[in-house]
Length: 158
Image (cartoon, rainbow, N blue to C red; front, top):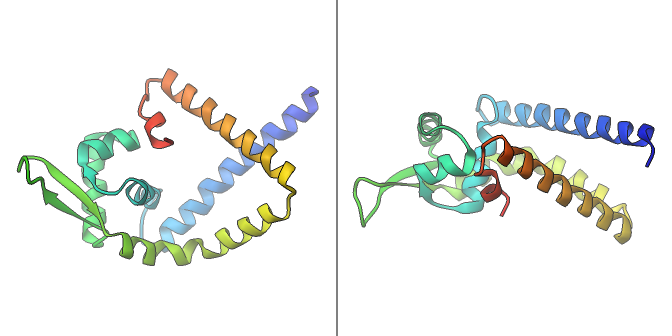
C-alpha cells in the first residue's frame, strides 16, 4: 500500500476516534453524566458484579476515581454496594442491569440501527476485512497500552 493510502486511512481512523468521543460525550450528557462515565457502565453490563478493586483494574482508573464513579452510579440507582458474605470488609458492586439498559438503550437506538444497516450493506467478504482490521487494531492498542504500563487493558477486551 502506498503512503497516500496509509495517510488517508490513518486520518479516517483518527476522525472515527474523535467523532466516537464526541458522540459518547453527547450520549453521556443526555443520560445525566459528565464525561464518559456512562461508558464504564458497559464494563458492569459486560462483567456483572465485581469488587471495587476489580472494577479499578478493569477500567484502569485509580481506586479513588472508581469510588467517585461508584458513588455517582449509586446515587442514580444504577448499582448498589453489597458486603461480601465471605468477608464483610469486601464490598461487591452489583449493577442494576434493567435500570442501566432502560437509561442507555434508547440513547443508542438510532446509532445501533444505522450501524447495523451499514454493516448489512457490505458483502460477507468486506465484513471479514473490516472485522480483521478492527481485531488487529485492538491487538495493537492492547500492545501499546501494555507497553505504557496499563496491563489491565487486555482484561477489558477478553
